Length: 424
Picture 1 (cartoon, one colour):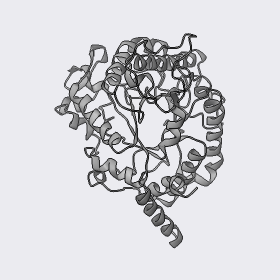
Picture 2 (cartoon, rainbow, N blue to C red):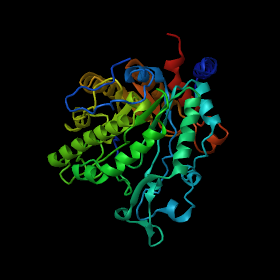
Picture 3 (cartoon, one colour):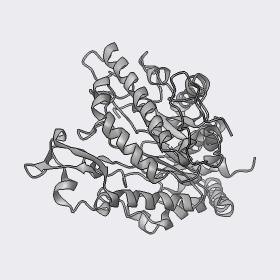
Picture 4 (cartoon, rainbow, N blue to C red):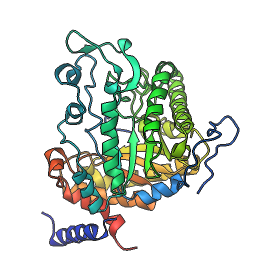
């Protein structure tokens, strides 16, 4: 049972929030923006003159606590042998947005996060169901080799824009990404490998061109994230080639890390070429699988960090990783969490000279337990002290609670905000 002091503390934090209102998965799962001339992508000669954008480092420091609007615009069938959303719905934007049990996103939900004290929201979006033409066979099956076209459905783009506007209109930072187009699902089409990159290159470039053009006039609070958790052809988590029969294959790993850097470079080149504010927009590129290098059980765990390359000169680029833990084992994991942030400082902030975003993190449970709250406060404080922006995955407001809206995990929410709301 929680002590009266603990409950009192949460009450004070909630009050302050209202007043201030301003990875490896262990189980499987202003700065000069012009790059140099050493082979890096060039900004167009005559883009519309954008206003000065804050640097990526400043943006990350200003974000404060972040949250993921997950299982919403990222909803998809995820299985070529059971394309249930395409087979059994009308394929409207709302069919997808609510397909995994979340309520339709509202301004009121985003406002609740702003009023609580959050400073940023990541908006994961899965795009493949809304690109070109997906033709099913045998009722609910899909052969991706029959996929045609590169045009994003205008109705889908309009809904994505509407949700992004909810975030921006509240004065929050927004990270917009390409989500379950990557990962271990059989529908993933962005694969970390030289062959996969060549197969996806044209459609990937066309996608980011459309996104960038749609949001070209948006200000510095909108960031673009290149891809989510991109895996090699074997769906290896933790580091590239871990799922091969030998548990490591140097050739597969090298191909995967090379492809990650090629995707990142193509992403940056494509966005920059659209001009306008995109010439200086802060961009986010993820490590292989968004892996964090956490752990000491394998000598290859740090490879996703060591092999990461930023696609342009530092200034308006940041790197993202993900990090999930077991809150019930918090006491025994403190040293591991400390090591995670030490690795971030050494291999990303230090070696690459770029700011870092933890785009997803959590305590392994959607239960609003005391253990989860303790873990959340510790991790959130470490992130703030390390100059890292961190975005909790999902559960703080979940399911039908989002429609009201109300908090599903008020203890965890309060704990995440403690480091940002307490007096310096």
